[in-house]
Length: 286
Ligand code: SAM
Image 1 (cartoon, rainbow, N blue to C red):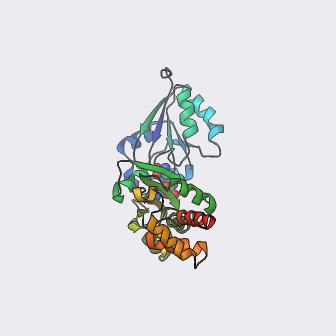
Image 2: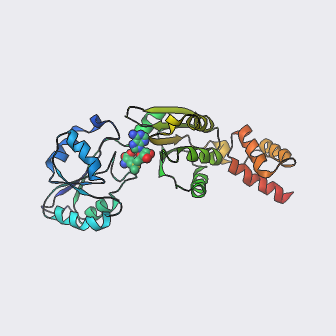
Image 3: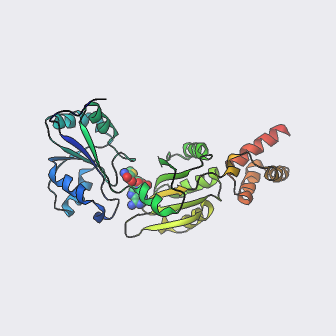
């Protein structure tokens, strides 16, 4: 633990709006106006926000591909006594956004790092989802490939607190499908789309219902998404109950495993993958 560098500048980590430009705080505005330099994820993107507020501060790009390289020069800037503001394209820097390397390096160099809090999609979504918010797990983005995504979701299947996941328009349907398969279609969930923007939509229902709703409406596949899923209930955490196993066994005698697991998943609301595993065990023991 070290004390702050004498005469060094301050690194301000500044949250910016996630859509509605009015969501920039008065303090963020004042910091962005007064610092000599802003490190921005995409300077063209931030230029629009700065222009909206008539801020002429010089910008420098800091994105995931140059963060390591540029950090040394930003630290020199801070060591020379000049303040610096870090912003990302939207929301809070470091939350599924660049900045971790710079903040860590600044801390190691005993530079004062000051948060200027504001919007973040995960907190905005959690605040309106109506799902338990006393405890939650922020997962960020799931892997883009389905096999890796399913593996990750299976690892999350027994988590009992609310899951918060970021998703893009390219993958929202595929991701919801994998969520149904790995977590079970009956799980209560919320899909928060385009928060604070013109087409803001907050859909609530079971994962099955949400998948159907989003798949059947191209408009609901556009924009940016936060998916929030109720944590696992005690029933899901324990092994599949005897009645469900019996149902699986009966269907397995007549149908291929995949189909039997799929049907039992639909009837019981349990995860297809969990039932597939149980079916494999039944087949092995039979
Ligand atoms: N740093 C940002 C924050 O604090 O929320 C997150 C940046 S991350 C690269 C972008 C993702 O955040 C999007 O793909 C989406 O999942 C989520 N997101 C950002 N803005 C959103 C909005 N207005 N509505 C819903 N989700 C949003």
